[in-house]
Image 1 (cartoon, helix red, strand yellow):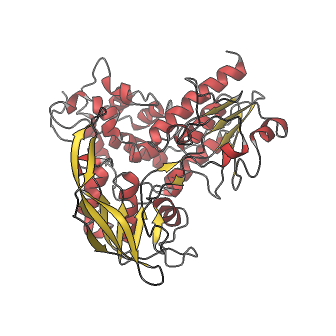
Image 2 (tube, rainbow, N blue to C red):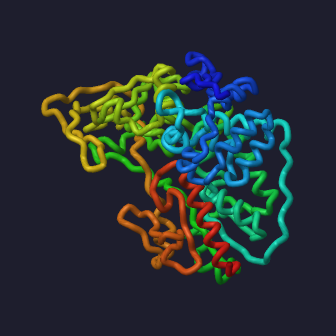
Image 3 (cartoon, rainbow, N blue to C red):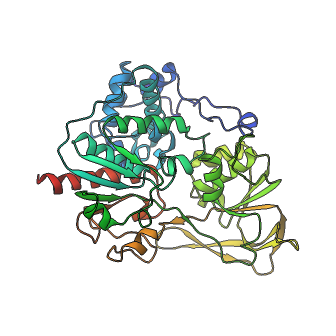
Length: 461
């Protein structure tokens, strides 16, 4: 009999007043007992509605059934059949907007904790049965993969399983893309990312770091000089956006990208780190997405009084509900319905505060999103010594500048057809480089689809 309790079994976590002072993982993961209990909430629906929300087609009811039967390793193998990064997805996927959104149990209560169960199964496998895969026999074809984020890792892994010699070219000194430079340790331990990458390397995926397409080499070089048969571009969206307001170039204004990269990739929060980082007394984070939550929670852990300034209300925050709840629990202040109009400074251009204006919500547009307008005469000032802009990102233009034939849209995103093919023959693209900043799992889905199309092209099937 299914367990008909209407709420998910709670996730063990660090206490808020403890975790907001360290970078250890917040959510501790299900025990076997909790995983078994949560799995029993699944009704094993015949039509599997949850699967329509998964971009990589994980066979969700099947892996949950294995958990119900206590077969945790079998559950992992089902997930791994379509998902190259299960331990990552179990931690950072927005399941509430994807698989769990379609869960029948969510109609009259909370959906089954699919993400929590996926994480449990992946962690169980890594702790108890982790064996690196064997490299398949080579089929003689070579594919270059640009970037080492989730779309690239997925594409390279799927191709390697089919015998392709896949080589990843990464601009930074450590592979992982946004998984290592963008997502904080307390949400996604970097040891988890490293384990997933080691599995791909065992399949034969080669990784070349400190290599920038458009600087170190060109797309033409990949074909003509290095002999690759196809190219996948998964270079992400790492170019930060800033507000066009007075004072934006003051000392103490950072992009969330730089702030998070110094903390996540370079461990600048550690006392012995050689990487400089601002240790603000009072930080203002501008934005309301997941990146804003990450930046705010990092600033808090550096000892700052932390405020999130967002021009809409709490109901319109685009960040995951869980991340917002964690931020509130960790004593991060939300200054809603206001927007910066100037960043203030002293005579040495060091940030001293932010001048904001109150906002009011308007009617919803065609997409259902409510517009905002300023309230005249409502300006006020907030003291601070650090401002972090978390307003979104766009693809880096370096590749486009190097390759005129590569078509991009007005946002700088690479244009592709329904197969993921770009305007250049044998060159495919996916992930944030195509969509702009989106989710890890959507990027993985694009990498998976591109790998299938590249295989069709090169194998003739």
